[in-house]
Image 1 (cartoon, rainbow, N blue to C red):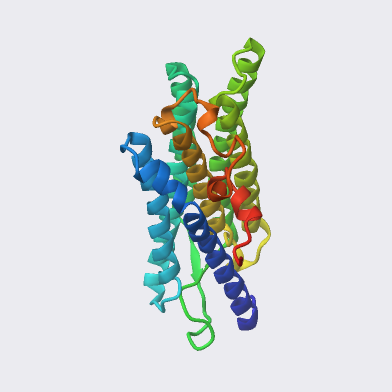
Image 2 (tube, one colour; image 1 turned 90 degrees about the horizontal axis):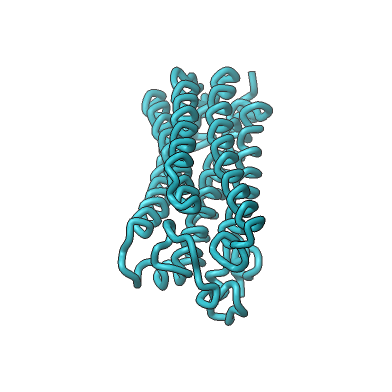
Length: 300
């Protein structure tokens, strides 16, 4: 059994990781706001735009509520209820991301029914595994008193951690399936000579970035369930989800920048894409995916 000092240290690190993930999401909202207003708000609202709004602001509001509640003192029962609420938000947000990416692949394959059936069957199987893995969880409420550490903190037993990790692994496997479908489509188009400079190149690039960063974040979070101590298991769940939402939002912004069809588009005029041609300084905020985050100096 860990000492109170060890538990307090684990909880502090967990809080820092959770706040860092939320800050990452908020920072992306700020630096991409100009692009959002220009390519989403200022144009006619489509189904793709509505999905963008739902994903972006559901994730933001959900993270605000989770981070606020985590710093409130609660009874053990209320704290356990909070844990269920947080888990639901994480799973639902990841499900929305996977659903939007599924529609993107469906459009990429010219709305072929067999592709949709394949993805729906895979999604149903993965969803069943996720639900089964997440039921009957057992958590431990932190014994650290409010005088030492404020807020609601749940430790995850080893058996429960393995079940939750399996749910994240199912989501990771579905992401992998969608990514492979993107690569297959792009490879076939190149072999047929139809892929030169069109939207498939953009999808390959953004899809590759999405998968690489999301895979790294997911893998890091999965490893915490297996190797981290009691109160650090799943400590990167918020960060992994925020990375997922950020990547999906950036992908949709790129699509809406090039065509009003957004998520459902299959062709694009690259002359209209300011991040492909030589971009002016005022357009740096809408460069693809994470380039703006790592290239801009926020303190200038």
